[in-house]
Amino acid sequence: MKILNPATGTLLREIPETSAPDIKAKLDRAVLAQSAWKKTTMEDRLKCIKNFHDLLEKERETLARDLTLEVGKPIQESNNELSGARNRIRFFLEQSQTTLAPNPVRTDGGMQEIITHDPLGVIANISAWNYPYLVGVNVFIPALLAGNAVLYKPSEFATLTGLHIERLLHESGVPKDLFTAVIGGAQAGEELLKLPLHGYFFTGSYKTGRLIAEKVAGKLVPIGLELGGKDPLYVTDEVSELKKTANAVVEGCFYNNGQSCCAVERVYVHARVYDEFIRHFKDETLALRAGDPTDRSFQQGSLTRPSQISFLEAQIEDAVKKGAKILAGGKRIPGPGAFFEPTALIDVNHSMNVMREESFGPIIGIMRVKDDEEAIGLMNDTDYGLTAAVYSTNMERAKSILARVDSGTAYVNCCDRVSPYLPWAGRKNSGLGATLSTLGILAFTKPRGWHLRG
Image (cartoon, rainbow, N blue to C red):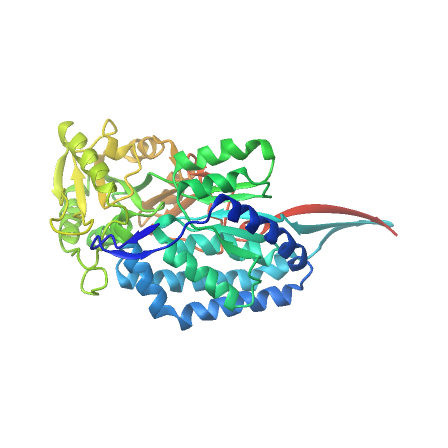
């Protein structure tokens, strides 16, 4: 498998893919390793994960550089991702022991009732390229702490990072066969689906997530799907600093080149503030500079997948044909690498693909609305349900609007944000199950109810 730098098109490394027999052998060894691991104390598991947390900081420079080279994100964003991953790991270190401890729920005379949590066994973690550290630790950290073994398939677009993760976990004390990487593309993922695993956890597109769900349904094992979004944001007419709001929305749209499942993908603006908002939004968008992601003077790097450029161009062409106007950007940046201008479209409507299909790139449609009712209707007019945001100085108004929008996460005066203390859960085509929070710890266990008569 050839690992290419998307910012230059040059070859970084060639890495052998894991064959089907090797994947099966990894499972056989993982079963034995998990049998021993589940008997270890929580203190020993926590120590290993704390070591991993510390190594992420110790090797930050190398890890951030390789992440930027293989996915194209700006070096500062790679550093931010490592900081975010360490923050999430600290949450799991703080919360796992209490969350997984036996829970006496009732005593009635001589009968005691207790809930305990057993590990699932050996799970598959089929991870993503856009935030390989962040979406990875959502799964493999709580899975390991709960007593599971993990067959970890990094995205083929983030293989170097996946191998770093495997190496650092082993250096941290996690047994070699307990956490093992499966290297390859779609075929490697297919092989994992054939195996008798005890759970499947995937981050990626709705199309692939649905395929995985269908293929493993007959196994009757837990499945967790973190899928895409078409996340809406509504700017009401009660906003005190419209320029500051526009700046925040620009960041929510274009951070990581919009290659985030929770990136803002649709913007609705109340008619009373629309014209002023558009002026500020245009200025902030045009101020963004795209270029060499290893150069800290650029805010935008390259797209990770060069093939995405033609998809973005098709969305823009469709929108313009149907009456949209290009406010900023709108085209590929000439030269080597997969660079695309941060692009804003106005005069858009829901007949346009840019307002219906997940873009997963630096492109946004901005639509004028007359009132809250119209905004709510448009925000709900989607097959997705990951996040939704409202900007307003009236907190009760914002909360009332978001309560009527079908999304797993609600933002007031913020967007594109994830907290380990809150569940990350999509609705409709945005996913199944939850990661993060204590729910995201229990997701890697199976409950046992104890009836104890003295």
